[in-house]
Image 1: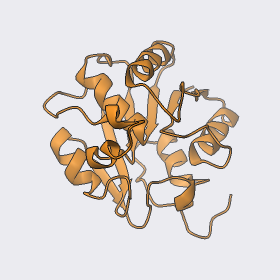
Image 2 (image 1 turned 90 degrees about the vertical axis):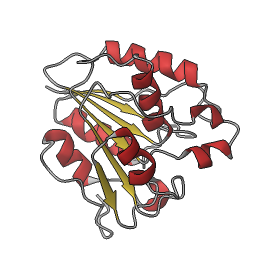
Image 3 (image 1 turned 30 degrees about the vertical axis):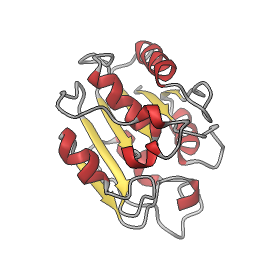
Length: 196
C-alpha cells in the first residue's frame, strides 16, 4: 500500500471538516498508510521546527510508493526543505503542493513571515505538481506566476477554488483522492453541490 504524508498549513488544527482530514480518513479506509501529523504551534509556527518535523516524518515514510501532500504554509515549507537539501532524491515518489501563500501575504503576518519562499534556482528532488485557485487571497499575484514558472513546477489553476480550504468549500474533495490513487487523473475543482 502507498504511504502518504499530509501536511497542514498555518492555523490549521486538523479540523474534521477540512479536505485533508477527509482525505486521510478515505485513504486509511482503503488500507493505505497515512501520516497526518499536527505540526507544532500551528498558530505561531517556527520554520526551523517545522523543517525538523518534516525531515522526521519523511524518514518514517515506508512503502512501495511515498506521496506527500502539503497545503498552504507547508507547501512553502517543502520548497525550503528542497532548497536546503533536507529532501533527498528518492525521499518521496511524488508531491502535491496545494495553495502556497505568496511572500507578499506572508510578510503581512509576523507569525509566518519567516516562511517567505526561498529564492528559485534549486532543483526539486521529487516529481512535484502544484494546484491553486485562480482567486486565492493568500496568493493574489497568481500561483503559476509566483511559484509554477519560477520554480519549474507543473501547475493546475482551478477557477473559483480560493485557498482550497474549508472557507472555499473544500471539505470533501473527490478529485484529490482520485489523484492520490492514480497520478494520471486530472485534478479538478470540488463540485459545488457535493456534500460527501
